Image (tube, rainbow, N blue to C red; front, top):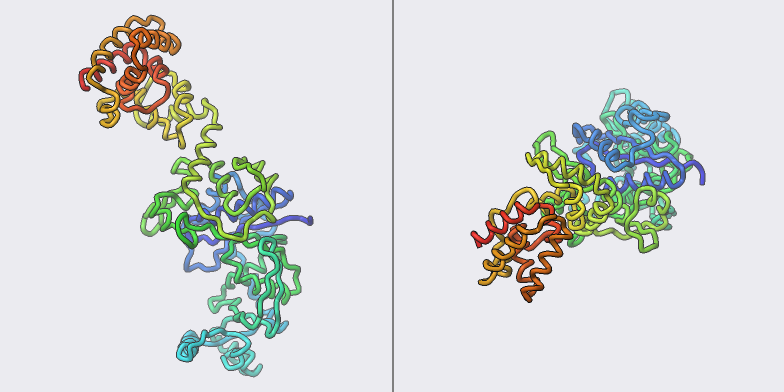
Length: 502
């Protein structure tokens, strides 16, 4: 395979959607798999939709996911600049080159004139398309004489430059994911390439930049599939070699049909952005995966498996493994349903892989923010709680009873665990606990078990109310471990408090 150069080319019109992040990831994986270059290009030709802070958000999201670009704004600017607004001086010459070659033309139609045409078509129950069937009857350099066209240009009359779509041709195109695609060119409209405000449209800027930046493969979302014919025709008109195309399927809603949107996340309570985003106009905050407690490795893993599979049963992949396994041929044509619960499962797998030391560091910081100081062995506590945690912040919720004695007791658990005879049993247990000298988990386990056996009663009659007294509910790790960590005095104190309350 020749030199691989791929680009992620978002518009800075708001926060980067999780679907856009997946597009960036697939470009990154493809580039790294083939020792190629992953490029970031900011497509900001539409200045009316530009949003302050969106570009830096995009870069921060890529960095957080450890899929930073190799070449782009401020980095290895071999083909810079990498913002289309800074390249606008380039595009007009290419648009005029197409006019010279007979593949484009000046169009002087006013917005009002085009609106009148659309309404006329509507009354005839037709759809207005500006192309081969009506271009000669509209106001452009194909219907006007050369002198009339020159006069309009000399008078600085507003114009756009339109592509001249071919007539009566079946265009055959190849897509790595979707295979052979054929289009009847008679159905294509003559798209605007250059606008009256002196800026190119996405279509022209995109093609020119991909050519000048020597892009080998265009890997982008399904929403650009309808533009593929125009882009292929533009490459042909310029007599340039076209890159290979691969159009990724949509990420679908968790329920129902259609593309995943922010509204779905708001309704079902999950993020659709990698990082928190504050709208600069409304100050509305949209939640992100980073702030929700997900690890970047988790997000990369679950995004990679949305629409791609390795052909194996493996589900947990680190970034290096993804690079090795990734193949565009294994990307699905059909949309991938977003599953917030499965994403949490991925997060749980990753938290289990974290070392106790790393989690203890996170846990210590969390305790500090809550103003809690403790002499308890946090590393041991983390090792007991880790298995049930999904996020680092869960460690506190799962184990706050280590730092705060319960003041209330779960009602349902109390009814289940605390019977008429329980108070007397717990008073006896207090005496047993008091005489345990070396208060280790092993000794606590041995002596309490021996006492239960000597009384010839079921273990549940003691263990459930003991857990309730120590924790406030029937949740938590091994109850002997809890007692040993709390220590003899605290265990006795909590038992006596429960006896008095329950």
